[in-house]
Image (cartoon, rainbow, N blue to C red; front, side, top):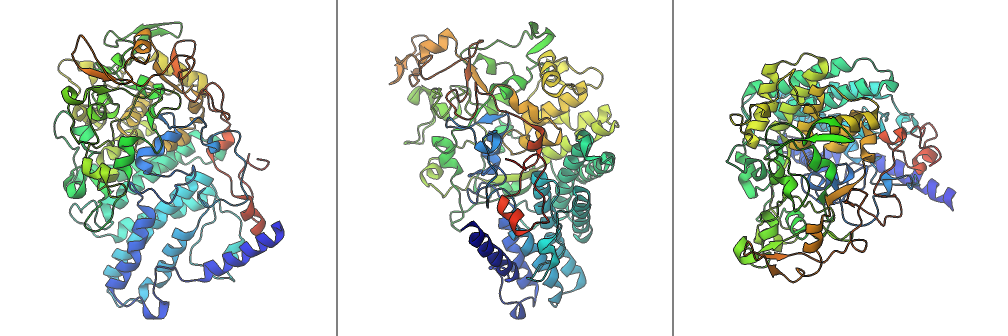
Length: 631
């Protein structure tokens, strides 16, 4: 039965590759003018720019829902509802025969190559042809970059294939060959796009967007080669220099600025709707949704009800936020005797959120703000009317860590009521990431100056709301970086070596600024920091005060005699709905059958993912990813 099934797959695969793409018109009747070219390319926008759309599942972790909002559920930033971790993150994962959501899918690249084989037939000037071919090269670079992140070595397909193409049965090309080709594609896109002024972030791809993608690709590849020395690729600096130049291009262009709309500017970046993204000074590439055009998604509804992934933050993320003075929660000492920052109030009834980086309470809901005082039925957000709804911290609860996200939350009743009709904007590329890329590339090259830090890290902190006058130490100063004995100890335990203080702070800034934007997992992979995923998954400290709040008396709401505010907290009993470690912190997924004590496993073969076994049968020249041969 297996043999007949695989033979059927082989026949289907050849036929599939020989067909024109479904979204094209018969070749002989197409490729006449600019309208034909634009029409064809429009399909690639949907394939490659994911935004908040739920389907299809995103590779390699089979993620459904907005990859921006939910992608960090597979990192040390967040946790999602349900007792078991995605099996792909554990030693229980078995390589499947076939898997159409792990990334070994060539549909988008087939479409791109088909375009590149035919676009020159249109009766259009050379300059205009190149301008649109640049879009295809941009998408080819992006599509292949995603594949290399997952598999490392992959086949490089130069043209669209037919049933007689030898490439159908070729081995994987080396990472070096493929990434050199990716760099060629993005460089050609940049060359062929005309110079111009700032483009609409939801408009067509342009030179700025291509420079952004180049910076992201080159920073990833440069750091991957630097830290993954087992690859034997000793040209990391070449890639880091390219990342520096591409990000500096966008900085020097002065077409973008950090959005600064007041005390909650950071939060407001991710809670815009309809056409607001078009005037967002920080957005470089994004997606606009429209009820008029019946183009929407379901993020707003799911994020309010939290019934999709039940997303909440891990203690690992909470502890990494700086205090308001720019220093960590522990400023000296050893693991057995840390010296606490005077501004850090410890752990209690969400007191750990106070006196911290201003982005913290624009990312994590402090009870008394955002969704905790919002009534979905009425659309009213008022603490005196609705009281405070505390997180559901039962191990089966939606906010099981006690730290529910505010970032991406939008209290818009009409969008929440409209299921898949949300028009909340999605930002794929934003200027803040370019500032971080520039700082990191220069720091890794050893060429960073204080002026560079002021231009990037300190500008981000200024926008966030740090008070540099009250706390001069809130600025990052080269040579005067804060001590962080807690974080350095984690690095040494998990990675055997801690990065320099400056690299540590730049990585911290990236984690905090870009949380819930689907970058953290990739960052851990490129830094060869996968073992950081084994830091125990923990939530808030279940203190006596919190045990009293969750003892059942507040399940239907009870007025706090001190504040006069009604408080609502679903019952969660210690050792029944809540389980804690020796220090009293909530263990996430305590009843899991595929991890123990809330601790993920790690092995270095997990930096890359396996090819489905069926593909190896179809093409014996393909070799399984190292480490996955017997899984």
